[in-house]
Length: 136
Image (cartoon, rainbow, N blue to C red; front, side, top):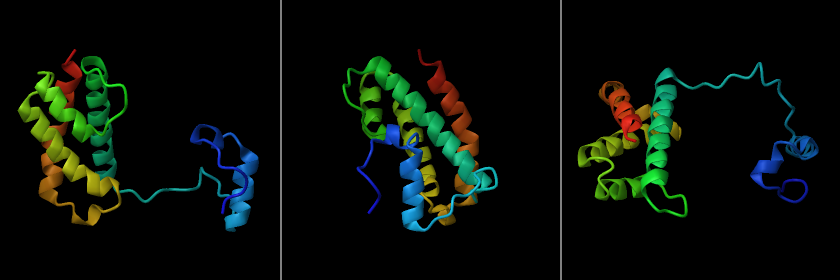
């Protein structure tokens, strides 16, 4: 069990005492963050960037064109954007394909990623993201 009352995520990063106590309780020595390197492949970094950029544009379009009070998963927003004529059915299909390729890799299951999938993403994603950005 962590030390103290759980704090909202927005506050936990500024509460150094809780962080120190939690590290002590877990037996973890604080590491110098400048010396710590994550072992993430170039492909996974690329897929993360694609996914981030795609989701950012879909959320921008959703907030602009749909009266939606609460955040929804991207896959739930896409059909509504098609219904409203904001994106095309083809764009919807491509976003779903890019999402399905990037998701496993982003969630640590990149060993199944094929060269053909990476090639598809590299050829399709930049143009799709540009198209989404141009939708005003």
